[in-house]
Length: 206
Image (cartoon, rainbow, N blue to C red; front, side, top):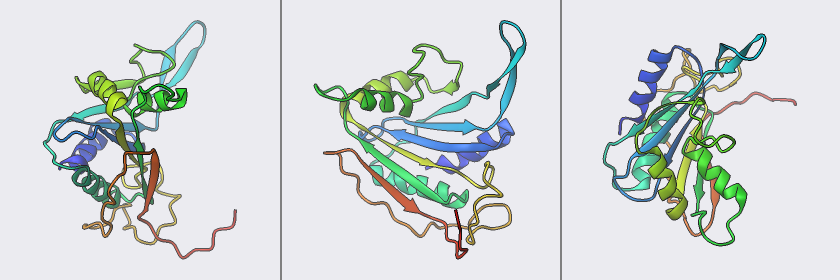
């Protein structure tokens, strides 16, 4: 899968450091994947009165490459997180949130996972989207559940001077392949899994 290449192309095109990368998938083979890139940067905007700075909008990309299993998608995300120098990668498995008794928090997390702005529905200023099926995917995820992966890159990211990770090259990257393998997700309950990728022998005192 071309997840890593898609991220690198966006880093080159946007020219800003990445804060975080997320990928959201509905557990149905061959459905599009939603890649969200969260940039660190501000742009001036004129409001009522003095100019104010607003965060640079995130990027939403729809990946239409066919896939057979969530393990296949997760392997590609682990590879991207590994090569981009992330300290860890988090996977959140979320059940459907349209059933009677689902909490407001579950509905909020679902909207956020698919790049929606829950505080201003219909307002797309927070996102530059190249994802024509994003809203349909969000509704499908609300009905069937979804998986969301998240990592924070060092290469091309905001964290070059903060990782303390002895596995990284000078540019914040790691050579392939990633040594970790996917763990099968379980959809009968919401669960979070963290894959530790980095390593440090430093004694860190808070």
